[in-house]
Length: 154
Image (cartoon, rainbow, N blue to C red; front, side, top):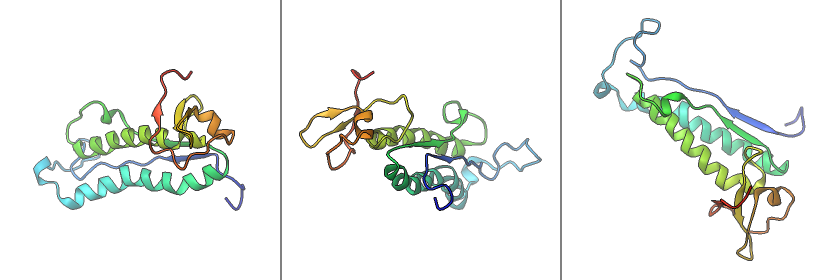
């Protein structure tokens, strides 16, 4: 912020697999799912999902001040399709997908998201407006936590 003056894009791009994940890669050891520890889970969860949460939280104030922007988060095909020995990784990347969908609803009225998103936000009068109205300063409500996708927008 000090150097460039504003933030337009934040990208949470990190991922690790648990001990024993993909045992055929680089000679990794095999660890059965039931033998994974709480520490294994917390390590994968901390990097793969919590890291995205913390990145987004840190970016939102600057993006709001800028009138909007984009938060990108890298997920994985493993969030949609099962692969052997990486269940913890798959779970956290599926969590990233859910988080991003939720953030699109919660932050779209501030102009934060993808440029093609149309997110309705509650107004003080109870009306709903598309996310671009929020970018123009038309949003007067106290929050957009109850925002829903507007199927008529587009």
